[in-house]
Length: 631
Image (cartoon, rainbow, N blue to C red; front, side, top):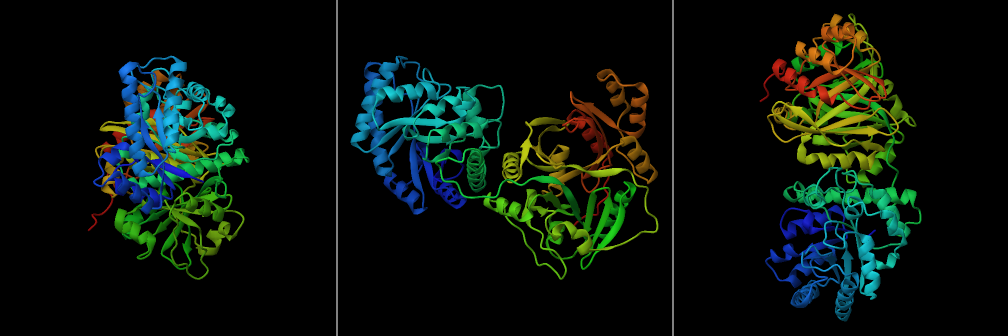
């Protein structure tokens, strides 16, 4: 599979970009003119540097405002084109991308435009150069691939072909189904870019909010199915413009870019087996069914005791010791909570870095080894540490903030990990079971700049869907949130990105040096029963102001007695067209970590976002310093 990425999509010097692109696995680059202008050597030396990194120059970009110009302006446009041809000769590349004109002086006569390109193609042919003409959604006259293809046909020269771009076809709503009628050998390049679904000027959206395939909301699989139907076998190239990318780490952006192309090509191949583009054989994206466990690291006895006391109050029972490690298992329903107090190994290093925190998440999948192979192919880092006698080698990768994701399946001994690796225990004073059944979702907190990267991470490894980005109001600023939900099970992960350390999420990141999991949400089928049992066990819920319940009466047609029951238990409420959502919270501890208890009724799909501002204000007011100072 021939892959490339535009140098304009990455930050850094020209050489830094090349190093990142080559290491990520790309075959080539779209070389941007500004990179040549800023390069200290000659264009010929720039071309040699590209090839020294093992890369090809897929095309030179970009040339604008060429066609449809009158008189002296037309002559000047051809002079500019010849200078581009000279530069391309020095770079030793043969494809020039020409975007349709945005000039107010350009005339819209299609025959005139076709004649301009016919002449340009003749001159290009003399130099063994090809022209890829692309309709831009914001252009003066040629705003889509349909009109651009009409121009290419009328120009009638093998040196001119079509350039396709997914953003212009999908965001511009120019009927991508029409692509299938274009001969594949007349498509010279396919550029891929995604974008969020935002009602915004398309040029501004493209320039500032572009995304890698799979990070946005455009249907790139449908776009590529149409491209595949033409028999196109040329390069797949990324040209993505985003303020976060052009100020971020080029290595991270390049890895995300390659992952996005490979994931997209793999998805298309599964629905279009006749795809002419060669795609590596990969395991399918994993089916994720449920969270198998959540593991806390805590080397401090007092802090470990605090977690144990909290779990006891929530109705969890201590049920087992690890056969060889300082690791304990707590259980309620199908929820397994592990507390690791080892003084060596991964969990200990996570404790040294983040303090007491969630360091590991176990996910039950259809095939653990296949999931590992898929994740590694998508650029995830696998994890391994020495395994002791009678211990299982559970496949794992690094996740958000350097944390771990372990994969467990039902087709191997991995499903018996609790009976194989743990010695059963009983306690003299077990708590009242609180009716908690399963982990509903896990909330991971990160810097806002990381959200697109981790969205792609999850959606390229697992069969899951992503929600649109929503803004959660914190009294100190906005937190951007997006949910990742498994297509086949109860795995839900919310990604929460903060742009400032003043928010509750941002403060958690700062205080815990990037610890990734800020809260774990546990589901019940009767929230009032769970609240009552937990209160009897000594659980202290987050206190919600009385004004919230007065407002609840105004917003929802709820029975007054029901509202009073919620008020007495500090339960919050939300609903949508599908159902209802009840939730209450623990007090925050360990610099901002907390538990959520919830009940979903009907087909409610959300996470109570409308209550977030109330919850955050209460957490900031009630936060307690329960952890000890760390050296």
